[in-house]
Amino acid sequence: MLEVRDVSFLVSEEGRKKKILDKISFKVRPGEFLVVTGPNGGGKSSLAKIIMGLAKQTRGKILLNGEDISELSIPQRAQKGISFSFQQPVKFKGLTVYDLLNIANGEMISPEEAEKILKQVGLPAEEYLNREVNGKLSGGELKRIEIAMILARNSELLIFDEPEAGIDLWSFDDLVKVFRKLHREGKTIIVISHQERILKIADRIMILKKGRIFKLNEARKVLPKIQGSEDEF
Amino acid sequence: MNFNEYEQEIFCEVTGTSEPPKGAYNFRVNGKSVGRKSSKNINIVSKKDVSGLEIYINPGTIDESVHIPVAISATGLKETVYNDFHVGEGADVTIVAGCGIYNCGPVDSVHDGIHRFFVGKGAKVRYIEKHYGFGPGRGGRILNPVTEVFLEEGAEAELVMEQIKGVDSTIRKTVATLGRRAKLVVKERLMTHGRQKAESIYEVSLDGEDASSTIASRSVAQDVSEQIFRSKIVGNNKCRGHSECDAIIMDQARVLAVPSLDAASVDAELIHEAAIGKIAGEQLEKLMTLGLSRAEAESQIINGFLK
Image (cartoon, rainbow over all chains, first blue to last red; front, top):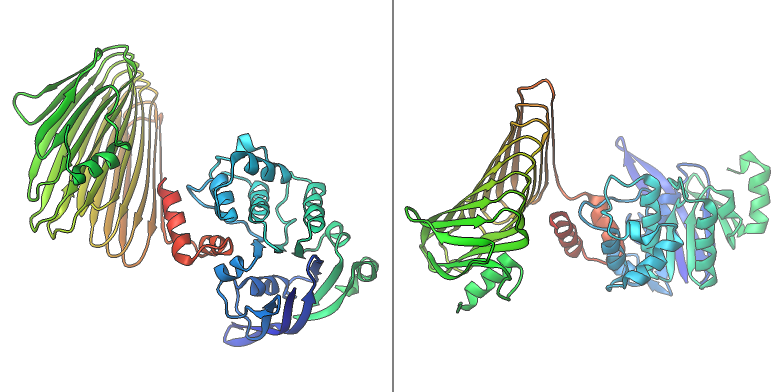
């Protein structure tokens, strides 16, 4: 189980402190699918990065299965079973899709296993396995490779920061299928998203607004309010 | 052929195998040829006036190879070697060369290798050159290769040149002259560390109509090492030339890129791209989210970049 306890996050902006997150507390159950949504600048991505260790909270704690991981490094958290899909996929000159899947998995995987993973994100292995993950790939292709790395990693807690961003050719249906499958497999999933189709498959939805939890409840209770009123955001 | 453990390591690094190569070869250790084999289509003979080889590849020779690795394990040895490759019309061959220096003493060891390629009409050459150095001595491991390529009509040459480890100082000069419809591709991979210095110089003359060249250099400069990349492409006809210098700079290293394009024909299309920068923070962060330490992530990025 993941617990975010009393977390605040301040940044310096033009010499002044700006509060991005303000005393956030919540828990995510094992196997739960939580979607974090809300207006831009509300602190969603910062929250995701703090859980992964990519940003450091100003106060508060992050606990994973009861263990305080607040001071652990990024790789230490990864080894504890947290994966993170970046909103802006990273390019690597010289590293191929297969290289990255192997790094993600931690061991050499067979080309057949890699093919299965790539198939889930709609990429034909024969075309992509040995492709360099560089600027010649489109944003949509890079995004799918980013998600494929998460699948190869097979972690328990999966964090996706706006997975729908940049998905051009690949349909949302396939992305939603991936999430459903991971959910069925019992993975704990946190997705930062604005997409209604992703919100609809969540167990719970959190609305973050101005750095605070505006709402956190079962999806069926939160969703009608989001759909019904622009003001909810 | 009997080699000591250092020579064995050098040949393994340079040729990529510990087995004797198939096809023609000449192994040179500490200034002497210690093993040579010609083949039906490839004849290797010693030069008469200077140290080095004449290598004759018959016209139409297909899918054959020549290995001419060099090892220096005697500290303080300084040599200049001249090797000429005469590649007959329509041949399609692979040439593996390169030099490794093991230096355990206080005096510099130096190998200057001058290779000239005369590539006949329609012939194709893939040239793989690796340079490598190691050893505990204070003496430098110095390699200064000169590669001259003359491509006749429709000839093609692909030069893969690597210097990944242990060479203290190098000036690497490559000069190419291309005839009609000739094609040159150069892939350079270079890594310097410590106080090493490396200078790569490329001078390409696209003389023939529809000649084309691509020079792609990727390098990593670590510690306080210094690298200079100089490229000059001259377009004397309707032609296409492209050079690309891509460097990762780390620590207190220095990288200088000096590209030069000289179009002497209105139909010459010449392009140069250069990028020098540190490893991007997001690349490190991405690999760290996959469980790698910072050092492991750096290593993966560098190895991939130089692959």
